[in-house]
Image (cartoon, rainbow, N blue to C red; front, side):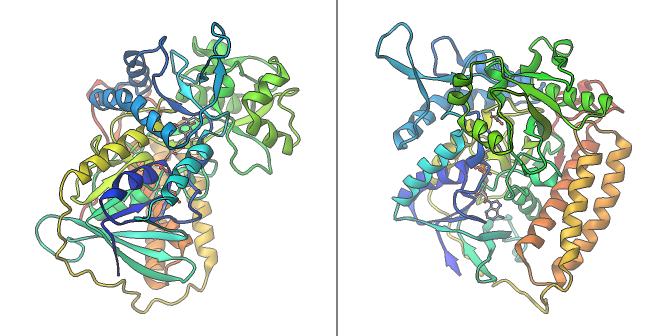
Length: 533
Ligand code: FAD
Ligand code: SIN
C-alpha cells in the first residue's frame, strides 16, 4: 500500500496547482493516467478570462458570466472566482508563465498584457500565450512541480475507484480514504491511501463521437464520485464548441473562439454570413447560440460543415496571432490566410459535475474536486469562454487553503488490497471497442445539441442494456484501462441523459424541442443525482 498525505488524481491545471500549494505541508502523490502533460489543459487555446485592464471591472465580468449561465449560476461563487482571479494570475506569472504582451500605443517602449476577446465577453479580458495558452501553463506548472521534493508523479496510472469507509463496511460517516489505481505498465492494481483525495480528472468530451477533447477526457472523476455516493449535478449542460476543424485526418483540433474574437466570420458553403439573422453579436454570440445556429444550417442545407473566414485580415496578423492554428491547418492543406476554414461543432466542456462548494469540498469528507470535474455553480447552464482555467486556478488555491488550515484526520481504517477474484484476461476485446463506439455514436445522435424526450428515452434504454453488459465484463475479466474508461463513459452518458430528462425546459446548453421555453420553476434548480445504495 502506498500512503500519502495528499492524493491528487489528475495532472492538469487543477491537480498541479493544488499539489504545488499543499506540498509544503506533506507528502503528495499525483496519479495521472497517461504522460504528465496529457490533459485538456494542455490543449487550451484562447486563454484565461480575468479582469486586468482599467477599461474592465469585476462587475462586468460577473455580469457576462451570469448572462451566459442563463440564470443558473451561483452569484456568490461567480463573484469569488472573478474577484480572486487577478491574484491567482499573478502567482502563475511568478511561477514562470509568460502571457503574450503588446506595445502600449501611447507609451513608446512600454508593454502591457495583450487581451483577447471571446464570445459573450463585453470587454477584452482574455490573457493568452498566442494560441497555445494551455501548453504554456502546463509547462510552467510541471516545471514548478519538478522542483518540489514532496511531490511524486505516477504516470500511466489510472484511478479505478475511490476507497470509502462505507464501501469497506464501516458504519458512521462515509469518508474517502484514497483510491485503487491500475498501474498500466505492470498491469497491477495498487492501493493509494490518503486522508485527503482531490479529484482533478477533467471532463468527459469522449462520451461523444466528435469532441475537441483529448483521449483522457472520459469523465472518470464524475463516475468515481458518483459510485462513491457523492452528489452529481447539471450534467445535461454539455458545451459544444462551435468551431472544431472539419477534416478527415484531423482527430479533434479546435479552432479557437479567439479567431472570431479577432474578426473571423461564420459563413455557409456558398458564402452567406448566417449569424447576422441570429444574434446581435453575430459570430461572437454565446456558444450555445452559435453551435445551435451551425447545427441548424447543416441540417437545413445538408452540408457536413460550415466555414469560418478570417481571410480579410492581413496574413501577418493571422500568423502572428494564431501560429499553431495556422500551422496545423496548413498541415491539412488549408491556408487560413487565403481560404476559409471548414468547421463543425463538437463536444467541448462539461459544465456540470461533482457537486462542490467554492473550496472544492464534496459531500464526502476527505474528498475534494476541482476543475472541470467539479460543479461549483460558476458556469450555470452555459460556461462563459475561458472561465474554466480561471475556475480551476482559484478553486485549487481555495481547496489547498481549506485542507492545510486543519490538521489531517487520522485514518484508523484497515484498507484491503484490490481483489481480482477469479477474473481472467478478457477473451473478446472487440466487445469493449464496439460498446465504446456505440455509446459515443448514440450520445451524438440522440443527446446532442438539440434534444427531444423521445430521443433521450431511446438513449437511456440502450445505455441501460450496455451498462449491464459492461458490468458483467467488468466483474469477470481483469481490468484494463480501456475497460475502465468504457465503464466510466457509460456511467457519465447515463448521468447526462438522466439530468436532461429531469429538466423540463430549454435553458442554456440544454435545448429540448419538447420544452422549448424557460420554465420559471427550474430557474434556480440544479438537476441533482445521487447513486441509490
Ligand atoms: P484536465 O486538464 O483535463 O486534466 C485532467 C487530468 O486528469 C489529466 O492529467 C488526465 O490524464 C487525468 N485523469 C483523468 N482520469 C484519470 C484517472 N482515472 N486516473 C488518473 N488520472 C486521470 N478553457 C479555458 O478557460 N480557456 C481556453 O482557452 C480553453 N481552451 C480549450 C481548448 C481545448 C481544445 C479544450 C479541450 C479545452 C479548452 N478549455 C479552455 C477547457 C479547459 O482546458 C479545461 O476545462 C481545463 O483545462 C480542465 O482542467 P482540469 O485540471 O480540470 O482537467
Ligand atoms: C477557445 O479557445 O475557443 C476555447 C476557449 C474555451 O473553451 O474557454
